[in-house]
Length: 327
Ligand SMILES: C[S@@+](CC[C@H](N)C(=O)[O-])C[C@H]1O[C@@H](n2cnc3c(N)ncnc32)[C@H](O)[C@@H]1O
Image 1 (cartoon, helix red, strand yellow):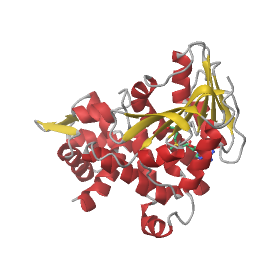
Image 2 (cartoon, helix red, strand yellow; image 1 turned 90 degrees about the vertical axis):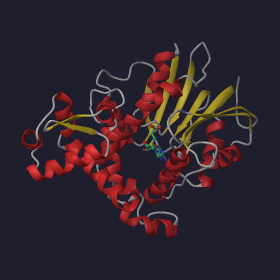
Image 3 (cartoon, helix red, strand yellow; image 1 turned 135 degrees about the vertical axis):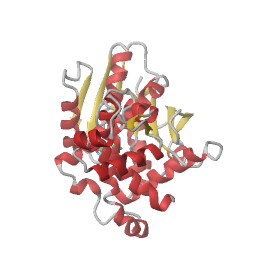
Image 4 (spheres, protein in one colour; image 1 turned 180 degrees about the horizontal axis):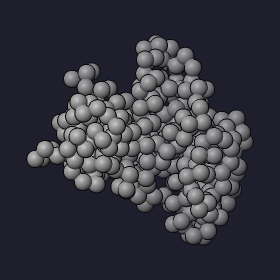
């Protein structure tokens, strides 16, 4: 059933989102006829789709009408704080590339890295999808970030939508942040924040693997970055990032990490799905906490903080013995 239903249901959810099915039934219970009118799908088609969503636990069916269940209201309706529709659209764009998985697993990377074929619209889907996930993780992550009380400087590598940096600047008075990412990602990030980014956050369109990294940082974020890179590149990136830190500055790493057998099966499963997907997208992988600890060997303090979201871990590495580490 994993091999049969998984892909089909994922696509069914995407179609439901695209046609406004969940928004419609969240407003008021609807008959098949009414749903067909609102979504533009055939009566037979929308009935199949809605029944599948009932069986999948998203919709409810009573007295001839469909309504939104708790899961749909929580994840699939735009007004919800935990809306993940944009992330599902992003997953859908990934699913279309999965035909190449066998090649990628054989060669350790895809025929063509996925950024190479990105249109501007694909960048938008990517940035909005990542923003959905960040909204979900932010409340948990932000409590664990430590910055000097007199403000602090953050370098957010691959920071995309800039949400983590923005929240830090909101919370910590005098804090400033530089978000470094590719230009198209940052154009979409800027368009997401209609009122502007405020004074604290600036966007810097650079490739962090080839550009010099600005020194004097209190925190460097590598959030959902290491899974896209191989071992050698991660080791070198961590070394360069830690060298930008001031005395007692911290490197924060957020990722889906493998190797924690004490966590739930879902927590073990999700990082492996991320790893398979990343190898297919870009030649990345899922890395373990132990591997990352090895790449941070120059840090005297290494705190591992599992988050509430299955499979996601935040690491804080401080007291670096290498690099500038100016007071
Ligand atoms: C998986 S997303 C993570 C976004 C954000 N950090 C988060 O956790 O929500 C990875 C981001 O890193 C950016 N990125 C990947 N490689 C990069 C590079 N070499 N230079 C700059 N940005 C890069 C991508 O464009 C993308 O926005």
